Length: 323
Image 1 (cartoon, rainbow, N blue to C red):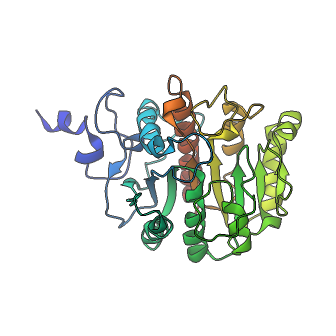
Image 2 (spheres, rainbow, N blue to C red):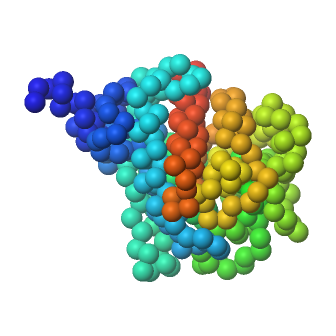
């Protein structure tokens, strides 16, 4: 095998540089996210992708622990061409690596929160930003803790979901994917007055002061109005972006633990995300992909495309000197 053939397959482990796109068969090879280099070396990394395979905090169907694998697999299909509608290689001048997954001792649940915090701290201390794949939505709580330490609290929250996840929970040690933002507000990690939740369509008696654009509002006023509201509410305040895949209607994302009808379409979500380059997003996650309930990978593909657009946002901000 000559050198050119060697680097055209399994680029995740044989390539030397974290820069640039590498064409290799979409149906073969080691499956990092978008064929990024697998590496634990954080030196020089601008953006670090990692998975948190947790689903101990779910309230209905389990299976989100397999979400990071499913998203990586789906990303092979979009890794061989310049992303649309960007028309450029986001990795040309931005070093992005796949760090692999956070180790969790699931037989000792009391250790999980701190394990995730430590995982994120180690990455953020290098100066890199994070794009994290869940796992259930609980993982956002320790991720917020690490990001607030790094960027200052309180942060703004940009939250796409069918659920507000602000149900009451005064147990600091509980693992619950529906109470993280109740805890985060009470901990001072996020400022509800500068935070926005999009796609909500389950009732909660207390949304804790968050700005709510429920699914009906989005359908009535459209993506441009959502973009304008995000920019108005968040401004230039450091914002953490979290996307629960059940924000999408089950027609577009059946592979999730708590599906709710009446949600957003993939097209609506991508249109919103693609126009957020002006927002100061300092960290990102995509959660609740549960491939056991998926059909033809449509949920994992949606997550992979959302992740790709978030990377392109970062690449644009880096090119404009905003990172």
